[in-house]
Figure 1 (tube, rainbow over the protein chains, first blue to last red):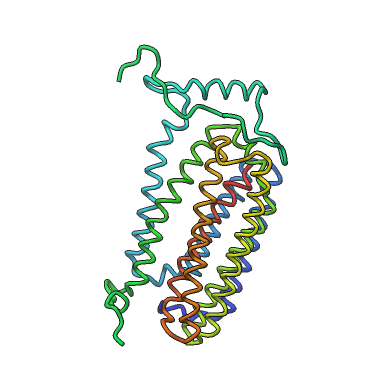
Figure 2 (cartoon, rainbow over the protein chains, first blue to last red):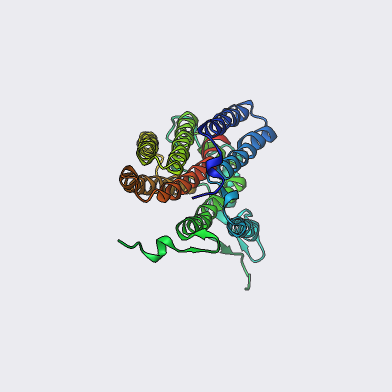
Length: 142
Length: 190
């Protein structure tokens, strides 16, 4: 079992849990103010802090050999690489020799107010927000 | 009775079981990271997804986050009890953790029942496909964790194999960490 774990009493973990609840409340209330940067900080920044508290204090990653931290960090880095590699394609409606016509049309309709995602309690599920498949632009060559 | 080598071997300065659970977690990061990364790309690219996200119930998300954080506390206290050699208390705390998992699933079932009955299904559009896939994979991990925890609690109650309490606890905390990120992505940022 972890070597440093016995050094902590139950009260230490209860204290960490209390911190987590405080952060949870902040992350819930912050976005209610509807300020975009504050939402990013309170929702996602605090999620990172909460995850750190759990990984360090509950999972005791510091008690494991250093290579465990490296292994976990490596997978996170690969996720970032995946995001960086795929996002430029996924997040654009057109690129070199390809376009997403259904997406472009759906975005136009959304901006024109012709479709909506619905509000609380509405049946909001049946809009097709974009076409997922790529289509080649006319005359394009790969 | 001798124990299997895989249980007793301690390679690279870490017991094999603990090393194994960290490897599992590293591979799970690839699974959840892929889903959540893809979700994030689409979410940032489509303004209408914020409207879809407005249909999720943040109070139920908050409730489930509270439940999982509290169940994680029970899991780490079970580990603490196992460290002291108190298998019975460790088992009881694992049962409490399991009860948290069950409560989480009940809230999820209520939530999904409401959403599906209001026409928001996995086939409705890409947002809801991501929503049900991410939350569904997570719920499967909660179910698996609960089942494993019941087995571990059975042996811990007899003061046997107490090292397993830590292993299942680490796994459970990871499930908690995944939800910590799912909560803002699916419920909060609208």
